[in-house]
Length: 258
Image: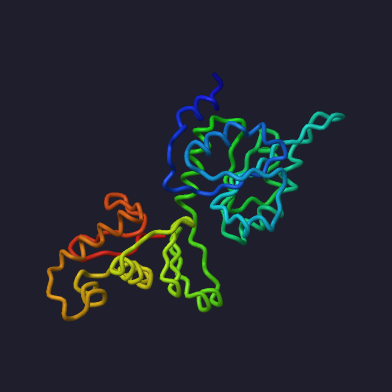
């Protein structure tokens, strides 16, 4: 049984509660098939295109682009080193403008040519490689993806707050993570709103009690801890290795570093 068949067999029946969108640009998808299969098995939504189309970025809103810059075989000359790498400058510029990280797949010849092309913001991977190696790199890139700044007009008109992969629409009172709706109670929503408006400052339990529960609330401050725990659970955050909300020992909480 081929490796991709074993992967698909293991993943059969698996329900993905959370997915991430990856756009793969390859003129010859068969040569990156093992990576496509691995990503699909690991709960990624994978969109495979033969060539880059700038309009697909806003249409599909991928979290990451994978660009196959390996040489294209030519019937008369075998291959031209770096041919697709040089042709990917538009893709790299568009991805940088959209704040989407790019993983560029290169063979040894194209890797040697990389200095002739601007690759700022892109990660490089020699290909072919083990799909697991690529997956590790992809997960790291997604974790380190910078927060996309929201244009002032967009923030004003849509009342949108963005932190990492969390989007909070104040007008609709809707919270999304990686494009998936997160169902919060009113208290959890108000807590998250307080954090996203805090500019990373430490919020004490007392200040959260006052701003979320009100001055006349007579419950103990542990009610804050209980609701923070519930909010973290819904955001799939961890108190031990937090991505969104950090516990400041002896003080309170703050947003995790970008």
